[in-house]
Length: 524
Image (tube, rainbow, N blue to C red; front, side, top):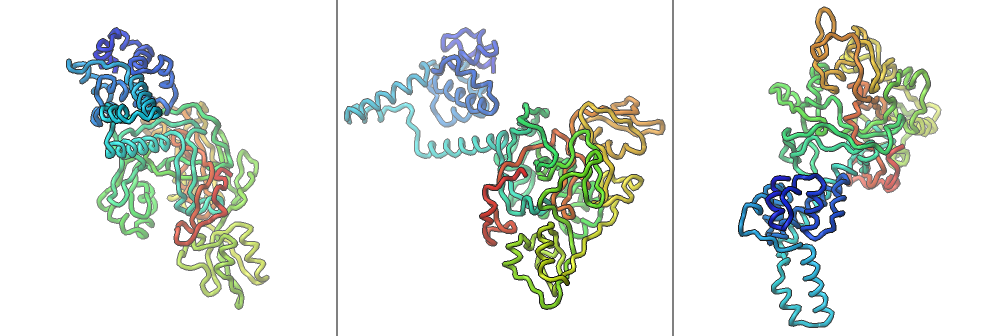
């Protein structure tokens, strides 16, 4: 950039050396196009500076009489090339500050209109150097809209839809919500070559919507607040770096290896596993998840009979915490779909999907208020809680010597790593921390007969480089969360849910709109 500006500046009677001085170069650039030198200070403001820079690049090009759409496009896509072409082309002469000239021109147009001087008005408009075709106006408007939306989505606020019932009934399937990316610190893009407004897959045709290179290192701007325990948050799925992607969902490679059950339920997955057709994704292109942060850095967590304990103290449960039950209604007792709908019970609360009650029986995910309403139908209503079985291969840390007797209702104890904290490494805890050390914190890790080696150096302890969190869904028996895949690293945190701006029943507009959920807070 400095080199290309050093070719342009002399044509505008500015010393070429000033192009090499940070700050001064942008102030001189601002003066050349017709701004005050202080206008360049806008370039210090994140996100805003991207738009300011593009505007200044186009205006510098126009100040040399280059008004075509192609010239403007190249100035935005890669300004140094455009400036180099102007600097090396003897035919390109500095015409003066374009913004000043443009203002003077339209002032004259305005004066002619005000004086009803049709002759001068028509003459000015016929010789209007700033005139654009209708087609170009439309194209530039669309490009700007996409550009603006993409950057707002990338840095400030993004819209999400809840696709699964893991957070029912706090956040329901079909809820559309806005998420702030500024609250926990704006995470600058790591993947920079992508299709605008898409996350990681291309709709209909399939395939990834981005290129792995070029890429930038992880960086996060200062946060407004910290991730709080007990609050929902959005993050990139930590284990979603190597995944099989089917029309149903994404599966991690290790998930499929540990639990062959998934292959039996998804034929498309079976074919991909056979062909080893998996995708490797960078951090910011892993799938988005929304769960409740139930424990933060440095906390010790344990679940005893469904109740979460943090550092030995029972935690306040969400109002609509759900579990899985078998319900049997006595003969003669029926519940209308309308009544169930009023109680917030729908097909999404049943793993059978196609029905709710069949012959008086149902398997449902319910909260305490819904259980009370069902019991009020008759003293003979039977509601039996589901009792999960241990599943060491499908639960973090995937070591039967540690979690052989753990279930989703009785889990732990487990410590959540904290930045700067040091933990000893031994055979009884390495299963908890190995992925964090090797994958999340980018170290080489080897286990040898005489101990552990990190980056080639023998180590009996490790100091963590970042904070970690523990995430769980409010639908405790129907949520794939930290109990299945472990910690959420801070560099995977995306943002804070703000509010629900739209909500469809059971995730389908055909079923109607949940008007009572529109503009409801999504951060409780």
